[in-house]
Length: 166
Image (cartoon, rainbow, N blue to C red; front, side, top):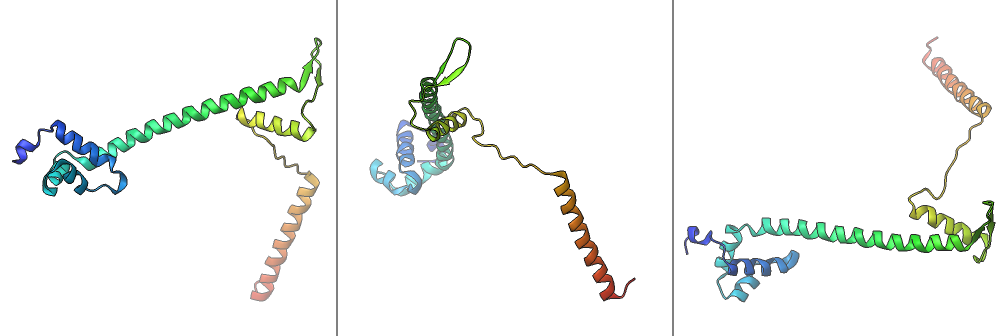
């Protein structure tokens, strides 16, 4: 078969490609040749003429994108279910009076359980579960700065004595 004739991709070529693709990362041409009862060289020509490697890469990208979309959908669905459970637990562990006062009605066993529930609620809503705050006393900062400056000055003075530069 000439190269010109081979450029017309047939159903058989498509089926051969599908088999080749299905072989996965360790795919080779030999199983395709055996399955389609043709020579290895024929399959090698199909491989080259119809850009099987490029098509595998393109199909992998499409499959990967679909898998990622499905994974995201599954995760979002699970997150919604968890949020519903956490919201229901919050509703159960407190009562709001007509005046708007919140009265704990803990069916939750202890405060640690409530804290865990609150952190889970915040986490599922995308909020931070803890805040690290650094407070600096201005006097302490000035004292630390002065100590560092004194240390630098002492180093400079010692260097001048050693080098003999006044």
